[in-house]
Length: 216
Ligand code: ADP
Ligand code: ADP
Ligand code: ZN
Image 1 (cartoon, rainbow, N blue to C red):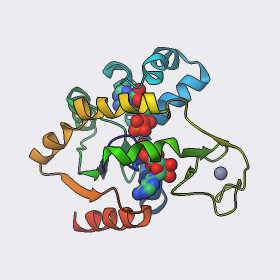
Image 2 (tube, protein in one colour):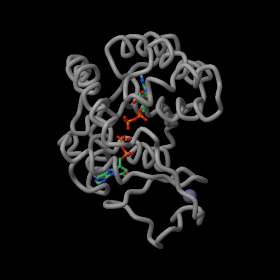
Image 3 (cartoon, protein in one colour):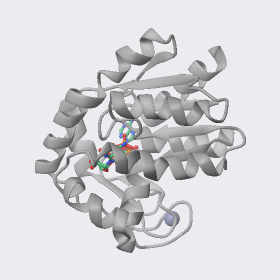
């Protein structure tokens, strides 16, 4: 099963991808996470990606395709992949199709998280993750059960993304509408596009995704 989560920054892609990993055994491929790891390690890919990421712009297609292509070529996902943050434009969607075809796979489902842009700034401003296990939290919408302690691993160290600031968020939302949103039509034409209400609470969004999977 190859499932793409489509939606603007803050829509809840990472949050729902994590549940898909835990319950369905899919392997999550997040180009954003891979690029952040590359930047943190100072690798050549990271050095090349950093300026665009800091500015809230897309990195080059060549870089995005290269970083995810390595993982798909390695064939690590036996039950399949959940793609979060890739593809981001038509050129990437076409490159993905070609990479999957080499392994006799194709995109089975694209779940679009429908949200209001206006609400995304608040979600993004409140976003942080556990520094140890990467569990996601939110100041307004998902605080840890015990203040300052990760629910999952008990760590008391958390991190925020440098690009989660008001200025960059506007650039990222604009990039989404210009370059990524047209993918909905591309996948609708292939008969694989489904919608869920991304404005609902985290558990309700998850119920809707499960319903989409059951109907598939
Ligand atoms: P994306 O990967 O699409 O950028 P995330 O999954 O990181 O989005 O979610 C952005 C922030 O909003 C996180 O802090 C997360 O805890 C929170 N969040 C995710 N889904 C919801 C939801 N349905 N309602 C409220 N907050 C949410
Ligand atoms: P979000 O969905 O919250 O905006 P991501 O973690 O998916 O964040 O992406 C963070 C940044 O990494 C993007 O703003 C962009 O610079 C870069 N990026 C991630 N995935 C891609 C991609 N497929 N193509 C180009 N740039 C990407
Ligand atoms: Zn943790």
